[in-house]
Every structure is written in C-alpha cells, then in structure tokens.
Amino acid sequence: MSYLRIGLLLLIAVWLLVSCKEKNTATKQTAMQNKTWWKEAVVYQIYPRSFKDSDGDGIGDIKGIISKLDYIQSLGIDAVWLNPIYESPNKDNGYDISDYRNVSKQFGSMNDFDTLLAGFHQRGIKVFMDLVVNHCSNEHPWFKEASKSRNSPYYNYFHWWPAEKGEPPYRFSIFDEKGYGWEFNKATNSYYLHYFGDFQPDLNWENPKLRQEVYDIMKFWSKKGIDGFRMDALAFIAKDTTWPALPPEYNGVWVMYYASGPHLHDYIQEMNKEVLTPYKLATVAEAMGDVPRVKKFVDEDRNELNMAYNFEAIDFGYLPNEYKMPDPQGWDLVKWKQIYKRWDSAFTEKGWGTVYLANHDQPRMVTRWGNDAPEFRELSSKMLSTFILTMRGTAFYYFGDEIGMNNIKFDKVEDYNDVELHTNYAQVKAKGGDLKRFLEGMKISSRDNGRTPMQWDSTSGAGFTLGNPWLKINPNYTTVNVAAAEANQNSALHYFRKLTTLRKANEALQYGAFTLVDADNPDVFAYTRTLNNKTFLILLNFKNKTATLKTGMDLSKGKTLLNNYGSTNASETLQPYEASVIEF
Ligand code: TEU
Figure 1 (cartoon, protein in one colour):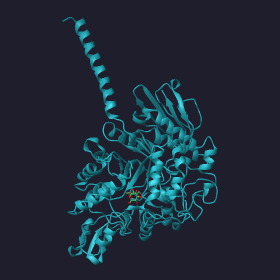
Figure 2 (cartoon, helix red, strand yellow):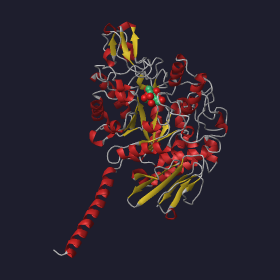
Figure 3 (tube, helix red, strand yellow):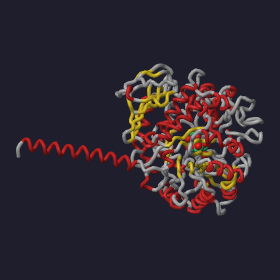
Figure 4 (tube, helix red, strand yellow):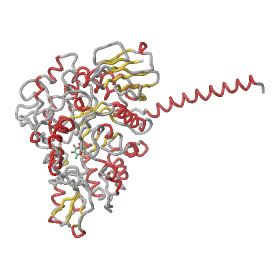
C-alpha cells in the first residue's frame, strides 16, 4: 500500500472516530436530560409560621398564605415546599409531630389546607409537603402508649434499651444539652432513642408495622393531590439495632455513621414501590453524607428518590469541632467552587442535585454568603439569586430572599426561640465557654435569623401581623419590604422575576452542562451552561471589591441578558458583587 493510501485511510479513520464521539456526546446529553418537571423547577420554600398571619395571633397561618397566592404566583416559581403544618407541640416548630393527619390549630383547618392546595394548583404551582418520619413528638399517641408499658402494641414503634442491660451504647443527640441520645423512661424501665431532642423519639423503621403506618400517612396526603415530599432527616431512619460501639474513627461525624443503617435503602425502595411510584410523587431528601452516599439515594436505576440537598456546600466555612462557628478568616471561594463542581459531576448522568443557599435551618443567604451592609445588600442578594437560578440542579429558594431580607442578629439569648440555639448555648455555658463569642457567631449562623417574619410593608407588624409576632421582626422592615420592592423597578424582587423568566425560557439553564471558568480565581465564581448550540456564561463577583477574571472567551460576541448593575457590556472586570448572565 502506498503511503498516500495509508494516509487517506488514516484520515478517514480519524474523521469517523471524531464524528462518532460527537454523536456519543449528543446522545449522552439527551440521555442525561430526560425531562421532568421537578428538574426544571424553581421551588419556593414557605415557612408557614413566618409568612403571613391572618388572625392576629402573631403566628403565620394557612389563610395568610392563601391571601398571598397571587404574590407567590407573580414570582414565576413552579412549586412550593411548605414546612410542617401538622399538629405539634412546636418545641421544634412542627418538626415534632403529634398528629400526622391533622393541620395544626395554630395554622388553621383541613378545609383551609384543601383551599390552599387548590389555590396553588389553579395557579399552576406544585406543592411539596414536609415528611418528618425519623421521629415524632413524645406527645404523639403512639409514644404516649408505648411509654406506658413494654406490652403496649406501640412499644416496638420506637427504639428501646432495657435498663436491666445496663447503660445503653453511646449515641449522639443534636438537641440534647448533654449530647446524649438515650432518655430513661421509668414506666418501662428502659431508655428510648432520640437523635434530636428528647421530645422527638426516633421511630423504629425496623418494624414493618411502623413502616406501613408511615406509608399510610403518605397515601393520605397523596390522595389529596399533593405533588411531592421533602423528606426530613431521611438518612437517619434506619438503625443498626445490634447497637455496635461507635468506631474510633467516628470522631463526631455522626451523619456518616448514623446514616448507614443496614436496611436504609431497602426501606426507601419499599416506600417507592408502595407510595412514590403509584402516586407519581417528586421527592427531595435530607440525605446527608458524602457524594457517593448521596448518589445512592437518587440514582434513577435504584428506584428510590429524585433529589438530595447538598449539605457540604451549605456547611462550609465554619471552624472545625465547633457548632456553626464562622471561621474568622472567612470562607474560601476556590474551595467552595470545587464542592459544587464535585456535586455537579456526580449527577451528570444519573440522579439530580439541588441548589440552595438558605432554608429554615440556615441564616439569611445575603448575610452568610453575600454582604448585608446597606450599600451591598441588594446588589449581593441579586448576585446570589443569579447563582441559585443559573446553576445546574433544581433551585430551592427561601421566602424573603427575593427582597434581600438579612439576619436580625439578636444580641440577647432570650430573643432566640430555636431549640438548637438554646441547646448549644447551654452546652457552651456548662463548659464555662465564652458565651459572648458564641452569641457573636450566632449572629451569622443561627437558624432564627432565617425565621423572622416576612416583611410585607412598612406598617407596624410589617404587614405580617396585627398582633405580637412569635419572633421579633427585623427592624429594617420599614425600608426592606415587599411593597417598597414592588414600587422600585430596580429592586431585588423585580430582578428575581427576571431570573425566573430567563430560566424558564432557556433549556440550557435547566439542563445544560456546567463547566467552571477560571476555576482558581479567588474572587469570581464563573461558569458556562451549555446545551446543543447555546452557551450561557455566568459571572459572579463574590467580593466587596472590583475583581477581574480570564474567561478565555470573546466577550464581544456575547449578549448580556441580565446584570445586577444594569450594565449591557460584558466585561472581564466586575464591580463589587456584580452578576452577569451572558448568552453566546
Ligand atoms: O434537620 C435535620 C438535621 O439533621 C439538622 O441537623 C439540620 O441539619 C440542622 O438543623 C442544621 O442546623 C431537620 C429540619 O430541617 C430541622 O428544622 C429540624 O430541627 C430537624 O430535622 C429535626 O426534625
């Protein structure tokens, strides 16, 4: 064969290889992008206690949410997640349920709920309910009965350690002052297990009867027509009931040990078969752990759940071995970007992630991840909203962030309501720790910062209540409120609406591949989202100073679709907290 022929054959072979590879990526893209409503959704989280009070008792309620349905629709969101609305003694604000089939009297009636659900559906908004089944309240009839006698039919609905066997093997409890997860019960002469507060006994998922009870509760709500469940503390439901001693490498990383009950995934698969598939429910779970662990919950082939929260990114920037104590050195953007990269690549083909920067367990996003100084509050909150709505993964957006609500930063421990805060305060106090330092840290990280009432207008009570609010209202409500934001065309609120519209109109922002740009840039979080022939470049300056980056792209070819400074010129120099969405 002549050299010419060999050369020609080689050329053809290379051409064939390249075109096949291109085809492969194309098929891969469509394969990874089987479309579903919940992958495209922006989910707006409503903390009912703090959203809108209709009867003047200082506590938000269902009728209050109903009165704001048109506002919620106007945001352009696709679904809502309601924090627990069930009957509860409210020691952990609804995460201690005493009746799974009734609405809390504080919030209204079942009729109100039915009206609310219909109101959402009429507006094309889907509804996620909170499912809290790792534990119930100690005032739930199951526990009340179980704790009377070992012969109670409900005794095995919970985990017990008989006192005649001595001290139970150590387990940690997050809302217990001593951090001890077993509580002695005299009537049964045994200890019951509680990973959270002693008022939140853990349910025994190893008991098939209990599992059936849970599925029945889920069916009860599903028959009403809800669209999905947000699953609380789901990683912890299964336990190793041989109660092995915690290994030396445990080192306080309880999620990695407790999240691994041997039958965890069997139970979730059973739940999927019994309820999730038949009722076509979407699911998002608190499935704590590292990426490989989390993947197991949402890998489509495993028939378990749809989405999981990214705890790694949200817990970033705290001092090791101290609960939610912000690192005085700040947090490292380059490392944070790598977390998102890792989580994104875990879900390119199977499974699906979520993107969020706040919820009821977190402080306000603008204080924690942006800058709530008056000159930067709106700018940085627009920048963070841009991040949440242009990343790959279902967007979970916390009520009030659309107007840039920020942390209230209580000075006194008495101002706090949260069981978590009071537990940790008591622990620091018992150890003779620095309480002043603790309270300073909590101004940044504590959960109550995210739970202060919604600021609707500048009237007394912020348009939230005519009564005495259950938690203090941020005094800046006189200027930071929905009414003021509606009146100002440049507000974070109007910007958020532009973002939801932009995301909806562009599949590339929903399904497009995510690639970091200038990954090592210490100030700017930049990335592209690409699908077929469309690319979006997103530039986000996370710092309070001018920053530059290298995109390696010809920005003159791009069109700026959205910019929080109103600029239309794409540039590699960004103003403090500048955000740009550029289309190519
Ligand atoms: O949170 C689960 C959880 O594991 C908590 O540790 C959470 O990460 C912590 O609150 C962060 O500060 C869920 C709910 O979201 C939370 O509100 C409840 O208090 C908790 O379960 C118990 O039900």
